[in-house]
Image 1: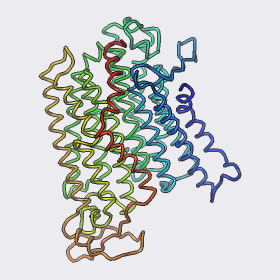
Image 2: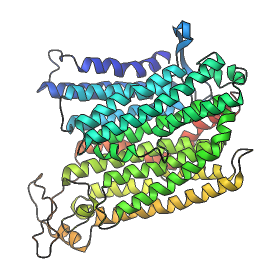
Image 3: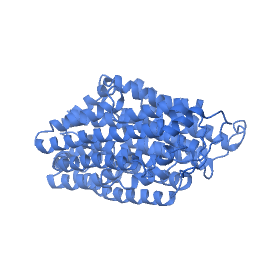
Length: 544
């Protein structure tokens, strides 16, 4: 188990180095580009297999206990150790990260985004995977910070070199926001380590550890500093403005990993560091965190409604990015309740959002490749998509992702949001119940607004208007790939119905696991809650 966890963290880094080297004879395939893309699929596949083996060997009877631990002295003078381990909180995030990265590598093998060297693309993808996996596996505050920062550079280059329009602006905005937040977070982590005498996260989270040496003032300062850095990555309103630009400009796999994995690093930090190590400071700031979360839920939904309305020229990719602000608001609200119900809901919503939004970004990226745009007015216009008529399987999967995202009971998106609101109904002792009831009401309003904009998107993109549907029904066969661009909306203009190919085999392979897990988590939530609940109970109990 120790070797498996170490392999999960280290193999992507070794694979990134190997991707930059010439391919060995006999493994070059048709050309060097194909060889390096196959290398990316192989390495991420091995990492996924190791993560699944790790989950299979995990002691499910004791999910609150740190398992597969490695604890080696690294920088003795500073007390920094290479300390790895997983419990019921980190294991699902670890497996989801490995799965999403593998699916991104598989998708890129068949559909590499336009840009420079494929070698650099694969290497950056593997470095990004290594950083995210390490974030969920390390148990030392300094190592957590290093892993947390490790993902920024590869994501910057993925956006700046393989992104779409305004990619340089979006990449710079992403790196500046996250780096500034990280600098503040580092100050909080150093404050905890210097005041307590250790950077060990397990020791700091237990009652008989050095945590007792942290005064109330130190805890307040630490939570404030660490919380700002984590809130930027989460992203929490109003520190979210980098997200829509980054998602809109990023290539498809960049958007999938940004939404499915990187946003979870911020909320995971709240659960793993702020809540157990500085509970008094977290208790003081919890109402403010909940207030920002509730505002973010409503704000994100209203922004999506504005983008979805007719004539707004809203971008579908940008709309899903704003929806992430609302969905991650539920995660932050659950954490702010400081209750087992709320925290379990937050952790469940983390996984659900990664699966569902990852699927949606895959679909929107493929829609842009087919149609040449993600502008909603063009997709719903006279020569629009009308997916139900032109690509029924594609349209059905897009509708499935939308209803899963709005929280339909029986699918993964339902349980996390419901449990987060249940936690707000009865927050932890000492927190203002009237305030949290208000936040719960705002979150409930957000669910209604979410259903509204997602159903509008389904109606406009999958059904189109009457003329679009008629064109879809009467369009004759054309050569695959002969896509007509959206024509003029002027009266009398010639309207050509674009031919949109339905799902390809590689798309089935890349997207089916996400859809299947969304159904499985919705129908059998105990599989995930059985892992997280004992760990959450111990975390809130001071390590006991």
